[in-house]
Length: 208
Image (cartoon, rainbow, N blue to C red):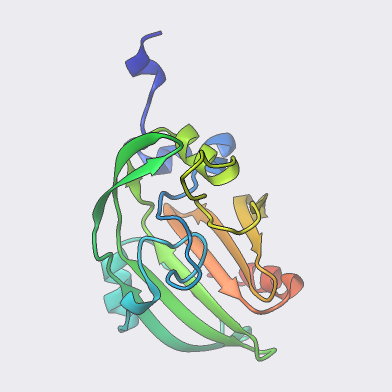
């Protein structure tokens, strides 16, 4: 087996990976190391909080260009729709000693107030196109980073790898805030909320 054959990159078709759960599990999106003072949540780190601008649902959905899900009114009230454009859509990142190029795409955010009064943010995005292996992204997310480099999820504890809506995903317990990430319908989704874990997963099942 040649090095070229063994070293397949993530410029492959992402929907094709969905058929194999082990590969889905490795689909941690590339991104800058998480900075809680700058980034909206641990997964969505290629845009900053300040980058989000109000938009209509159609405008935001058109910009992200993937399937968009929403919560029903039975679960909560949507109070805002926003979209963020990466300030630098093409970047070179360095993970576990390897440099590679990544193309980032816009992020849509829907903001809700749940029936319980808790806040919830739903992020929708096209999976970043990273010219590297799934193994490199996985190592950067779940292994201790080399000396002098930052972990993919910053100072957070490594997330739990659990099923979300029937597919492998990630669960972050940040104390007062909970965040999840999963890949479904050819798109990446992430949710952050100050609701408890039980309410979070009940609401996730309602997404349509």
